[in-house]
Length: 488
Image (cartoon, rainbow, N blue to C red):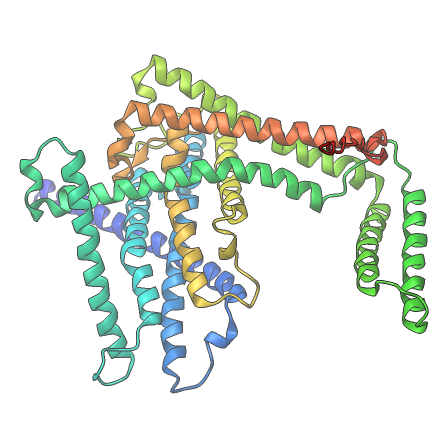
C-alpha cells in the first residue's frame, strides 16, 4: 500500500474512532440524565395511575407516557447544562492545552451536543409530548378492537391532523409577515423555511416567558429566603416575646376549655380556635428563632441576602453594559456559528473567574425563572406535589420546563450574560438578527429586574425599621366622617 493511501486510511480510522467516542460520550451523558429524571418523576407521580395489574391497559399506557415524559425532562436538563458545559470545556482546554486525557473534549463533541439537544427538544415539544397527552386520553376508534394499538392508531391520526393545522397556521403567518410571496405559495420549502420559522416562533415565546418569569422569580426568591432562614431583628427581646406568646396561648386554651364545660358562657368557640392556632403558629416560629444559634441568626440570613443582591446586581450591570454595546457595536448582536473553536480564547475578559461567574449567573437566572413560573398566578396549578401528581400535570410540567430550558442558551446570549456564540441551529432563529427586538428585550429585562429589586428591598427595609421601632403597634388614626345633614 502506498504511503498516501496509508495516510488516508489512518485519517479515516481516526475520524471513525472520534465519531464512536463522541457517540459513546453522548449516550453516557444522556443515560445519566435519564436515570436522574426518572427518580425525579417517580418522586412526584401519583401511584394510583401506575397499578401493577398485569392486564391493565391504562397502567401500560401511563407507563409509556411516563417514559416519554422522562425523556423530555432529560432533554430539558441537558439544555440547561448545555451552555455551562461548553463554557467550562473551553476554560479547561485553555488551562490544559496539551493534556492527553482531555483531548476528547473538543469542538466536534460540543457541536454535536448542541445539535442533539436542539433536535431532541423540538422532537419532544412537537411530537412526543402531544403524543403522550393524546395517548393517555385516547380510547380507540368506535367499533375497533380495544387494546394499546387501537389507542396508538387514534393518537397518530389526531396528531397528524394537529400537525397539518399547525403547519397551515405557520404558512399563513409567514405569508402575512413575509416579503417574498412567491416562495410562500407552496409547501416545497417545508424543511428549509416553515419548520425553522416555527422553531423561531417557539424560541421567541420561550425567551419572552423567561423575560416575564425571571424578574418575578427574583422577587419571590428574596421572600422565600426570608421565610426559610432566621432573620436577625433589631431591638428585639425574644425571651419576652416568647413568654408573652405562651401566656396568651394558655389563656386562649383555658377559654376554649371553659366554653366547652359550661353552658352559661356565650363564647364563639370557632373564633377562639382560629385565634389559638394563629398564636400557636407564632409561638412555634419564635421557638425556632430562639433555638437558632447567633451565627445562624446574624450571619446566615445576611450572607444569603447579600448573595442574591450581588448576583441580581451583577446581572443588571452586565445587561446595561450589553445595551451600550448594542448601540455602539454591531458585533454585540447574538449570532450563530457553525464551527466551535474551543480552547483558543476565553469568552470572558476576566478569564476563568469571569467564566465561572457566567456559569453561576446562568444557573441563577434559570432557577429564578422556574421559581417565578411556578409562583405566577397563571401557572400555580402546575406545581407538582410529592406522590400526588397526576400524569396530565406531569406532562404539563415537562412541556413548561422544556420551553424554559431550551430557550436558556438564546436567553443568556441575547442578554450578553456570556460571549459564547450559539452553535448549530440555535443561531438560525430569524428574530436574533432584529436589532429592535434584541434591544427592547435587554431594556425590558434591566427595567423589570431593577424595579422588582428596588421594590422588594425598599419594602423589606421599611417594614424592618417600622417593626424595630415599634411603630406597627401604634393605633391607626380614625377619621370621623360628618353625618349628612337632614333636609329641613
